[in-house]
Image 1 (tube, helix red, strand yellow):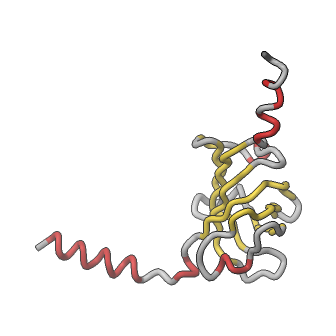
Image 2 (cartoon, rainbow, N blue to C red; image 1 turned 60 degrees about the vertical axis):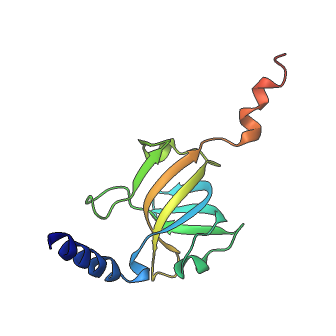
Image 3 (tube, helix red, strand yellow; image 1 turned 90 degrees about the vertical axis):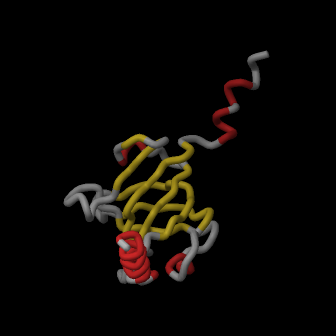
Length: 134
């Protein structure tokens, strides 16, 4: 009896969220952060799925609103290789996953909820030191 009730409530709860309320996962190359305007710039590699992701195009630069201070529910979380990190630790050119929600503002695509750094330096830089060591 309780299992059926919980299953019914879960179905109702999951169906209650509109598609614009869910975060979109996009992948790209980190270009930088501007603390004055609280925006970050990203070169998009994979725009993501959903109607909101149609604002992004592969290879273009996109600006996102990024607030790393404030209340727990409104600030963005930054992690590097699965561990909590600070925004200055993200190097320019790092490959990141950005989880964001659409914004009505004209100057930004959306508001960032989470940034995950998945690769800190390009592959050609990682292998550069091993070429002469034979």
